[in-house]
Length: 114
Image (cartoon, rainbow, N blue to C red; front, side, top):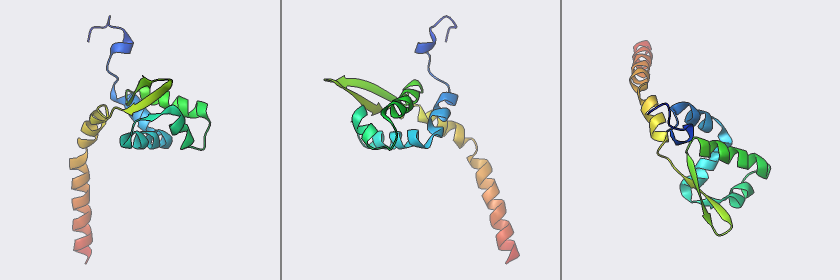
């Protein structure tokens, strides 16, 4: 993308996505939104933290483009956008062969000791 394009229009890299999902509460929010779109108030009701704290978590998820928001009357409905998680899945999949190799080595060691 051209450097002159405003930052807000650029697709975020993997780092903001990983930072967003690193927090357990944000993952819980994503789990909720995977089941249904929810207004902010119903998300707040599911947690034992303040409304401003939940809103901060929602902002991080929105900045990573993991959620989108649309209005329905006076409510702001939060919706999951799982597409950016594909980038994380692609990155993690690069390590699957290494994990498989390590598991095979462990298996050979355990079976060899018996």
